[in-house]
Image (cartoon, rainbow, N blue to C red):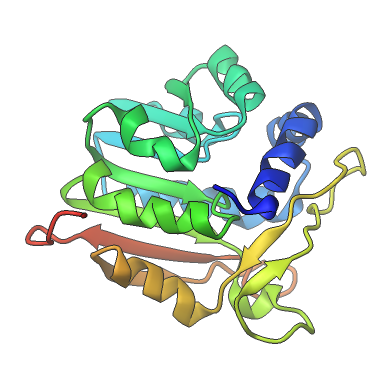
Length: 231
């Protein structure tokens, strides 16, 4: 991907591998501990998948959480050092690959469910993930995305698609140089699913118990059995 912001995302994650791994494994991020980790695990398990592809798996926490209920879990991440952390902890198979090589990385394997948990930060790279989904899911397979809620994350900026400066969640200050991210409106997110030949099954808005505001948004979609193959 040629966009300089896409490269900045990878650079930031590479720089923050150790403090991020510590923050996740010690549950230092309130919104994750209180709301969003449980929300994504419950959403995945509600479909009882036998095989799961975790896109942007980071240090591998989600596949570890699913490992007792899922027969096969493959985690993929573009940050090699995060993949090393995931492999060391176990709970699934983990491969280093960029988002534009997901299909090649999967080596012809198709999954009952693919999940992207706060891992779709870019522009072109994310569009490529959606374009490849029909080749990564079995017919009728499910794609679940948890991301920042467009209404809550827009702030005072105009409600239009575009790159935004990043900010780390409330931790102990050890995370630095936050990655930029590409803001999408609700309509733009829905458009990604439709353009990818996916049937949107539902949208969930997990609420933060302290604020009563959405802590995230979850999109749940299905690969249509009669969907045309990707070009």
